Length: 306
Image 1: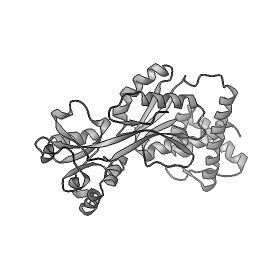
Image 2: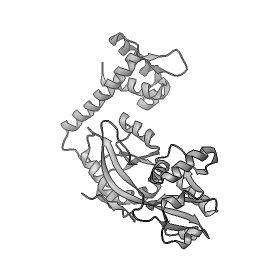
Image 3: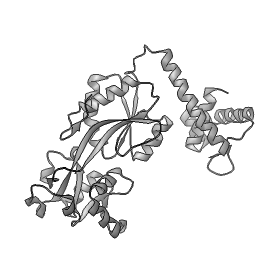
Image 4: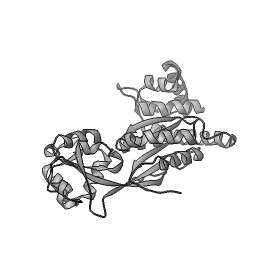
């Protein structure tokens, strides 16, 4: 049994396809298939069910693959311990961000990171929280920037900043006459929401209980939704309804398209955190990412400085 063979079975379990797993491991499919067959013979157990179009991991295979992941992580830790003098700020860092943070944080984060870690380029993944979490646990990502609530076994989170929400309304809307809006007033309006599966949608509904109750009554089919924050902005600008956006999503030219109304104090907020595996082997890289985010000069936030 070798680490290479363990990496092969982890890849097949994730890809559910021998060809894609071989591509991911940079070997030919016959090489990978022979190695896995050899391992199955050594262990005297079948790891994968090959009878269907999609490769399915057997019950025994699931347990062995889970242990293989741990062994691979420990092997990476051994490499790190054997070479403690290496510069942790060299080499790519794989960072995942949710859709409602990435477009607004990344341009400034990359500029800030160039100053503190110029030899650590970012490999980026934008996705939903659950998809990013799965990638992080599998070791395909080094860290995540996500919004709370976020609790996962074996994952550490550090708060980065609290971000207030604002109400955006079409030009000429009655809310323009108000200094601030409250959540009760929102429930009486046509509020445009992000599609299901987006954590910011849940955060808005959690902050506005009356709006959440109304949404449950109307149902998804009778609720106007947008697939992204940018889509929501355009829908509001066209007069379809009002919406709620985080502070970082607002730009200096937005007033040309719609009006921005603050919430009454205390305004609803979301907490953004940095999440990473407990045994991640590049702590200095994590510190560099954290410091770069805090130095990104995002406006209107409450930062959690060291």
